[in-house]
Length: 191
Length: 191
Image 1 (tube, each protein chain N blue to C red):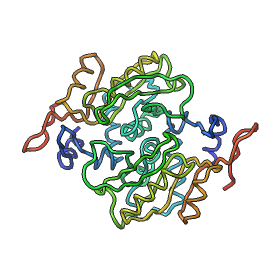
Image 2: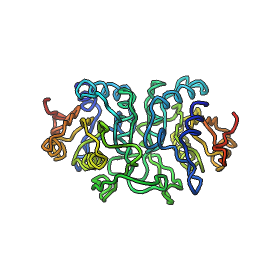
Image 3: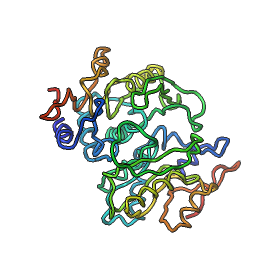
Image 4: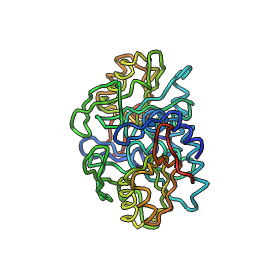
């Protein structure tokens, strides 16, 4: 997605540890008009017939997933990380490793909100090692629901998550895939 | 806001510990059309002239703040909880007590995204003890920015946060104020 690549090129930075910092428009200060354009782009690619919900995980995926859900006229579900007092009853659960926080985290989703036969589009802002997406896919499988696709804003193509998810046969669309950066700036994968 | 009160009445529950559970449309499964209606309602109340940004805190405030920011054509900022590796440089910081997680939490906002003279609308989904809002107000003050108002979806009127924030002179608008519940269901404050 050219608009997104331009924003990354103009405003993004790569920090030590391969951290891609684009928090001026995606995940600290958020440009909702860019999110809306992303939602429309996903809508062109995925078959959203009979879509039941958009699923993401807190926290930074929520903004994009909210705009996507409104765009496709379905509810937005977000999995929670770890146990809080505010979720009762039956839960789908998936344990992932968080590279951001360097510890195991359990993703939780109430069984009330996803059922067998549901058609779910998974959305997240970032894809690097793919742990968050793996956890979300597991929640969808536990429900007996169908994952109609996975939409990601920015994939770090030099980390293994994207390749693994595609190898498993999922329809993964990343709007920008950063393969690296050098003195000339970011290198994007041609799609 | 009548629409919101009806949804709470029809779908909400009060759990032990005065936890108001409305996670079928506000903060686990999210109804974006309801959020859009809320954003318009805030827009009627607050003077949004020259608004610079909508500010919230992760995680569950993000959905509503995103729709508000798009509605008012300004960026959405979300404060992060605790230190992650993905935020560099100067930070506004405010320490709050999280009743959900029963521990102290530090709210962080990069100084890049809020400056003196900015006009900020604070948005959150829930108001109970008011710790999250107190922290957000502190961040705005640290920046030398102006808080033009505070918009909350659901206030638990039987907890002290709302009264304290109003006593401090802030223009706080809660779209539904739950004063309690009994065998006849939720009691809402007349506004």
